[in-house]
Image (cartoon, rainbow, N blue to C red):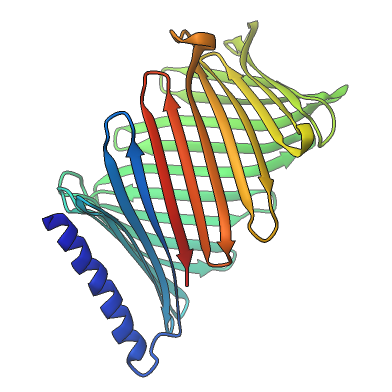
Length: 351
């Protein structure tokens, strides 16, 4: 019961602080938030796990503050506080994450960013848990006549302790080549990897095919990854195949089916079947109602080499609805073939 009382004290403290702040000369310019109560029931074990999530956004002059908290019967499961404030050309942001278990402090980030012509730069200090090292990041990004560039340099606690650097030129487009990205990475040990990737290159003789791939170079290794996508022409495509081109970049040894995708709309519903080498997922979803909007999704998950009929591993049903503009509800059922049955009910809203 100690954890429950501790959660109540935290909740009361949040409400009291908000009320006091709101009453002090109208200091808070805006205040909004959301809440959600949820209860998860495991019918197999009889375990009942209630929880509550709170989120609050407020503006005090130039300062924006966001608080997010998750409360369970075991205590404060998570508390995240974020803030941002602009001062001149600089934007200062912070994020602190606390957890109910050990270690209590789960990390913090403090950053300062500023624009320089068509580029933006920022300094970010990450303070992780006591088991990890603090990191200072120097981050830059900007536009190019073609595409954009980005740079990230990470330093350890001592500013002279170099950890990692990545530089990239992205979103290039030349003739039929689109989404071309170049990147190179270095660590404290030296060069790590350089890569070039391209995506969705249409074939000149048919819009039915498109090609995407990546070539990576390491110190003593080269990898070549190319994928061929096949789908019908048009925005209403309902069938697609993703093939892996097997080879070493100098020759093609064959094609390997990575996934099959089938989608269509029977009787106003949405049907989808996704097949991979290891699993299948069949999904059917729909919606109904106007004033009280209800959406639902049913899914069957099949795992390769399962010991059950049709390799079915689990089935689930999710139902969500809106009772008003500020009140919504949800229900979820998950049935695993090994006998585990879970139910979850939720009610949430905002102000």
